[in-house]
Length: 395
Image (cartoon, rainbow, N blue to C red):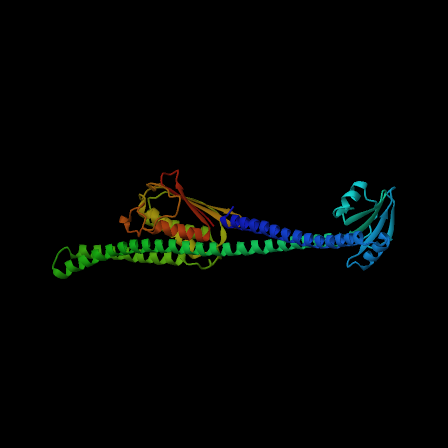
């Protein structure tokens, strides 16, 4: 579970618990205050009746009729039969027990869940009762609880959504900052390597130019010129590969078109066969048309066959196999050369010296292959059964 999700859940739980605690306290306090006010009226009516010297029943009728709340006066006989002196919404429907009547003589007692009563003993087996309903208070508290639940529910949804949005936005900013930092570090490393790689052929060229300019009659001048030509070609290749890597690294859509992969590979094989007539090349395929970026595919294949030409013996075997899979294709190219000392699991380092650049390479070929291959599909590098490198390109 992501950190932002965990934090959203924790914050939601804390806010929910706080809301329930505060809301419940407010509801209980409000209900208690209303019931306390009702008890006050009930107790005052009972006390007024007790203090009156007039007929208790007459006083009870007058008190209940003049009460600010619906107050019912009831007479309970020894047989616990009830007779209503005044009847309204505050009237109880069941006879209280003797225990409840005795307790009600000193304080308000709750009966039938929604009524409060006070009692006045008028004779040995007779009680005068004042009763009042608290159902409205209970219903009001119930509505408040429902409202609290709905409020917490929607607040929780809003809070979790807002928290998740903020954390997600913050995570995106952090991710962008991290990528920028990584890109900056890679750029610094890349610029350092590139400046070093470009400086080498430039230094060689400058040195030979000075040699030639200092002694125009030097018999070694033709050899100097040949060396300068090799170094200039190397530098041109390096610059070309750098520009290709920069272009591949740009975040732009791939331009796919339907193309015959079989024919493109046959052309590459023909070029390699022309350069190495003694090389044994086996090829198995059939017409295979796929939707792909031809430029990127050509970049991959050109570097693959260029590496085979430069870094393997001229008579080393090469195996090429193309298989159509659905709307795509799998290209497997193996060589019998020396291969790589180790197959990297991550991206190839630019200016990788796994295959020496003594043969005129830029050191960027493997990186170019991988970047271009990932753009059009997937590419992997393995040990070949022929002894060299096996490249699997899925497009």
